[in-house]
Image (cartoon, rainbow, N blue to C red):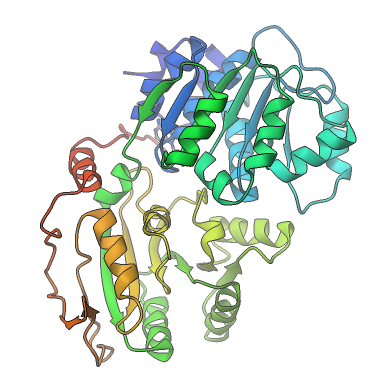
Length: 426
Ligand code: AMP
């Protein structure tokens, strides 16, 4: 299948061509024709599957039709949980819509109101925003949603996790009932399903084994660690390894992200931190610096795990294991993107991380192969199920059963969602 088989206008096809996309990904081939036909969609798909283009191309196709937006009253609204994701969707809009006369605005918290008032006071076609600031603008009357034809919720599960349920309901209530709605979510749990049933009308269900592309191309390794100082020595080892290119290090706390970035910089590495306590401009700068190569190592909390779309990340290092197994998959998905290969290294404290590790391994359906670095071996083995059980280096067995997730991974590994990609997108 090629993009020209979709009913997309020439300017959109030209922009896609310039991005180097030759073949639609599964989420794109399954949803784009249906969205263009006007159907509501409930899609399980994570970042990395090409979901942004899956909703943005039909949105732009709709906007390039004759009607023009009026001031403060967009025809398409994209709701996202985080500022990073909103900024990325806006970038994608500009990229795919570069030959169209579509006016878009991004409405985020943590930045001044002035430019947003200015954007909303002119005629506007598409708004991408986070719930809190959108509500602010609704309350102030600077944003009206009564002309919204297409409402898109991206990472809906994350939006609910972050406590935006009421805000989402208020925003939806301000939009007309006769609209088209698309809901994208990494997972569809009970709460997301309930939201979907409130919002969607006879939706088409599209399910993409999200990490399929990346997982097959990501080498995952586990390092058992004794304590904080052992973790730091391992981190410095990897930071100094010439094979370690653009790298994201994940920590559990903002304080550690900050402290480790300072420590790495002190040792001469180009490092920066990214976490929720930073102002928007500092966060944007950190991501831009990583993208542009001014920074090689970004030390981040999970804020950055979702949505962060920087190509060419060679390593993801879980300095701390995430609490939720799903976040592990999100984190490692920052590498191995769009056909590239990547390495995901996880540190697991032999005393404290058994449960977290077991949850992750159950979720991904396989054991993480343990690796050691000469001179930096752990002094204690990992304790599992109360028993001393040192993992074998090549132990990749499942936990005796194949999980649904593992089955999806296996199937997915056989069919990469990406066709030949002629050039890098951004
Ligand atoms: P997303 O899941 O929307 O965050 O997209 C992940 C990455 O895949 C982005 O860097 C996109 O530019 C890229 N991408 C999206 N669609 C395609 C495609 N059809 N072919 C190649 N790369 C794509």
